[in-house]
Image 1: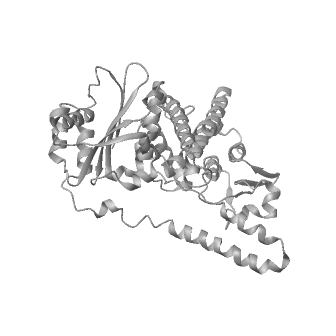
Image 2: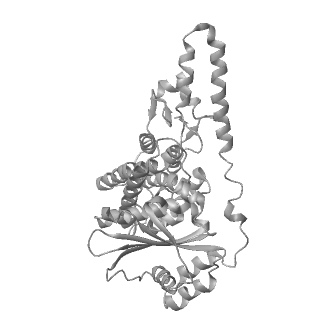
Image 3: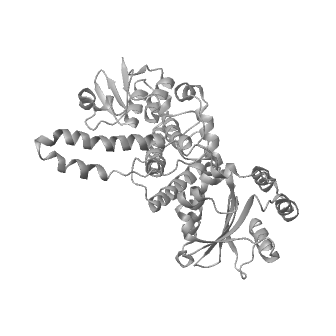
Length: 423
């Protein structure tokens, strides 16, 4: 039986069927020279899937679309396939985790990723909600994986294949180490799965995203207004063609300009500093006892006031912080968006108070004498805080900075509710 999969060879939804085929001993061939945006617009493809979505599986009985349905078909092509479990409860739980992987994991990764790469409108509150929902889902998944190697039973099932492929999009594009380190059981699970021979044969070597993709803002408004009025009169057809060319050139210019941020970051052009940020981050992470004597003393020994600057930040709208977990998610979202500054910054954020409204305060170390301009431009949360440069000649301010690094700043007797570190 010949099965042909219409999709690109890097499509994570196509990976599901191809990996299932490897485990099942079923032959599934990728169609040659598939080009997204071209091949899926042809009349032949639209007959198989009228909305042009990818992948589509071509079978002797007719086409199938939707990636989970395709993976199920491939799996059931082999009788009594262990990928579907051996009992009714196994089957139900496999289906349960397939739905969870789609509705809770994949959907929220997409809501976070797609606006950042220009595939949908970027709205900061929507991003915060997507990240919070994803963390909730990953927390539940991590709890399950704390005592289970696989999602169901003691071997790989279709649930593991679909879950791993959905996690792959997050790990590869947007879920940096600083994000996934909160979920060590998921890290262990994911890297175990993608290094299985049948996974590796299809996916290849997997590298985790080092930074979040910067927000890509679309500017499509100018084109329709210019082209519509000029289409009225026939004699102006040539003029219309000429009028359409400049936007095309502008688009090409915008595409060519996208790599321009790759020239050196201005902070890389500063004179060398005696303070090596990674050395401090390592000292902070590895000091488990005598923190004041070891880490805090080490910080001030390393600190270079000419090459770095310290800043206090205070959230402007503390009266809104009436729910503890929402406040902590707000801080977590801020740290996620600060990921673009990881090479140049260290930060500590504190949530303080026994009762609402909770106070949010922080201490940040930045390369250079000012808060980096690219951080102010890219991270909208920055304007939600009052920023004050630390005067290290003032012993009171210096001590306050030390206490914040140590998670022990006394705020008029109010307890520390939570502390989050950016490193």
